[in-house]
Figure 1 (cartoon, one colour):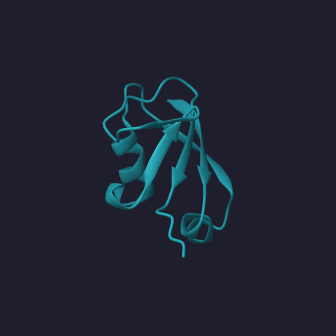
Figure 2 (tube, helix red, strand yellow; figure 1 turned 180 degrees about the vertical axis):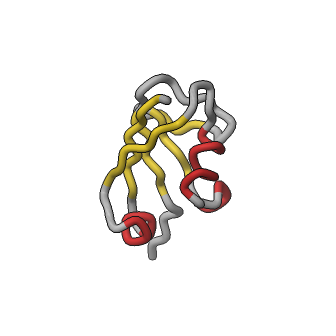
Figure 3 (cartoon, one colour; figure 1 turned 60 degrees about the horizontal axis):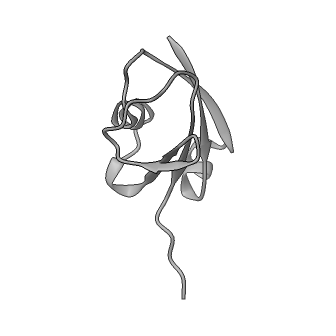
Length: 75
């Protein structure tokens, strides 16, 4: 198992009542696998892995930092 740090923003911070969490995942998992594990709809967030916005099919490198970014609205 590999430990990843997940940073949470907006409604996800409220859902998990945390700013960040550590998640243990198998090797060669993707952002999609992580989102499914957390129960987060991949269509509702963007993910940044180690500071770079990535597609949800991206493999997670060892011990990465994943920021889950909800949609932003403004006016």
